[in-house]
Length: 296
Image (cartoon, rainbow, N blue to C red; front, side):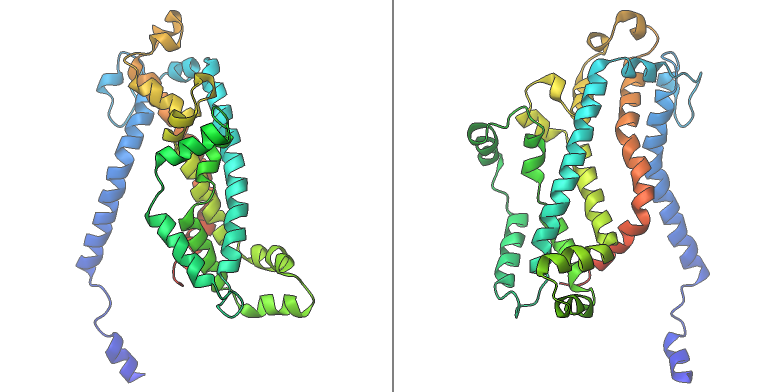
């Protein structure tokens, strides 16, 4: 006990060090939150006061939200994004699990494991480029202007596969061995034993996939040529790059708002699903990310 006390003596951070650490964390959080609060405040301000708003709205108004939700294209874009993320999360989760499970087995059961893991890492580091993807999706598969063209190029994320693989490897082997003793097949062991105890990593890869597809705007610029089939983030990009919003709404509504308030409201609507879903999955997210990253 005395030896342990001597070894740990002096390792506790002193008060001033704690104060500096907390101050840096609070400052970093404030720097990250200020732009978010500013955008929200501008979206709830009137066209006259938007230019002078910083952290709090002036002359609170919801006209910007009424204007954007009165546009049919906004609802169509939200619908495309909703279909895309549901399709992407379901497909990517299934493919990730089916790829990660055999790669998590040891070399005795899967002798070529190291070879395929090396190929995955190589694919993660070096991309084939945009031209082959365009030729494949548009010329060969004829999937241009479809939701599949937004999902399939990003269907398997190698980082998620490695994260899931490492999580599976740290699970007790006795669980799987007991299933095999009872006569279970590999697929039965996966779906009845492994997946039920892997909720943290499942939530993590689903959250990563959701964020990746919800925030992605560039893929639609490449594969989608019909404005009515744009996902919401691509629509927001087109709206923000526009010099004004007169062409996107009738003149009567335009007189009640400004470019700045409407664009801020669109940004708020675009990030709202992330602000709602992340706290709900946070308890699984931290556990899945850390446990899946510690074992190679």
